Amino acid sequence: MNITGRDTFAIVNIDKYLENLNFLGSYTNAKIMPVVKADAYGHGMIALAREALKEGNNMFAVAFLEEALELLDNGMLCNILIFNYFNPKDFKNIVDYSNYLKPTITSIDFLEKACDILGKDISKFKFHLNIDTGINRIGIKEKELPTLTKLIKDHHIKIEGVYSHFATADEKDGFVEDQFNKYLELLNFILDQGIDIKTRHIANSAGLLFFPQYSLDYVRPGIATFGMQPSNLDNIEELKPIMEFKSVIVKVNELNSGESVGYGRTFVATKKMKTAIIPVGYADGYFRNLSNKAEVLIKGKKCRLLGNISMDQMVVDVSEIDANVGDEVVLIGQQEDQRITVEELAQKAGTINYEITSKITKRVPRIYIRGGKCLV
Image (cartoon, rainbow, N blue to C red; front, side):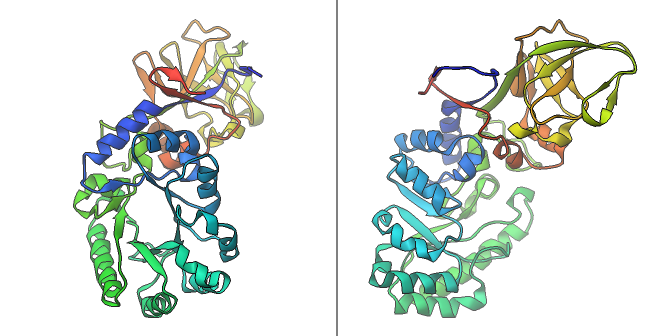
C-alpha cells in the first residue's frame, strides 16, 4: 500500500553518511568501526549499516544483543561488537552466530556464567574486554583483573580485543590522557599474563577528531558519522548532517488579540496573528520542552512555535509570510538559505544532539536517499 499519510518524514542521505565515514577515516590510520546502536541514533541502523558494509566497512558496534541479531537477520554477516550486558543464558541460542558476534566481558560474574552454560563451546566466541579507565560504568576494574585473567586462562577464553571509553574527549581536557595512560597500563598487565590481544580500541567520535594520536587499531565513531558535532567546543565543517525532518502545513488559522494557543494557555496573543498547524508532536519525538522556544522553516523563513506542543501537532506563527495548506515545513534541515540544526534544538531543549535524533520515533517514516534516488 503506497500512502503518504500526513506528509511527514525524516529524510536520511546515505551519500552524506558515507562521505562522513570517509572523512573520519582520513583522520587516522586506524580502521573505522561505525557505531549503529539505538537504530543508528534514530537514523536507521539497517539501512545505514547495509550501505556502509557495501563500501567495505566490515565491523560495527551496537549496544545490545538484540541489535546485533537484527543486523544478522537482515543479511549483514559481518563482525559485530556488542558493548553491553546480555543474559548469559542467551549464549546457547547464539552459538551458530559465533563467527560474527563479539560479546563484551562486562563482569567476572558474566564470564563465569557463560563458561558454565557453554562449556567447551565457549571457545567458539571471541570476546572483547572492556576495562574501566575512569568512566565508572560497565567495565572491568583494575582490582578485578587478576581474578579475571586467571579465569580467561583456565577456560581458554579467546580475547580478540581490549577496549575502554573516553569520558571527556568532547571537553578536550587532560583526563583523556590520564585515561589513555591507564588503558595502556591495564593492557600491559593483561599481556603480561600471556593473553594474546589482536585488537585495541578506545576512541569515540571526539577522541578520533581531537586526539587522533590515541586511535590504536580501531576507532568507534558514532555521532560524527551522522554529521552531528561531537563537541560544543568546536565545529567541524566537514561533517555533513545526514537527516532532515520535514512536514507540511495542514491548516491556517487567524488568532485574535487575547486568544490563547494549546493546552495550558502558555501563549496568549497580544495582537491579531496568523498561525499554521503542523501535524508533528511529542509522540513523534519532538521535545515538548521546545514549546514557545523553537522555530521551523516555512518558505525560507524561521517561524516560532506558539504554545505547548501537543502529542500530535504544533502551532507556529506565520503572520509575516504567505503560508498555505500543503507548504513544506522543515523542523530539522535546510530550506533556501536558512537552516535549523540538531545542535540548535538541543541547546534550546537543554540536552545534547544525540538525544534529539534518537528520540524521533518510529511513527516518523524514514526515507533513504542515495545518488539522488530513494532506496526501496
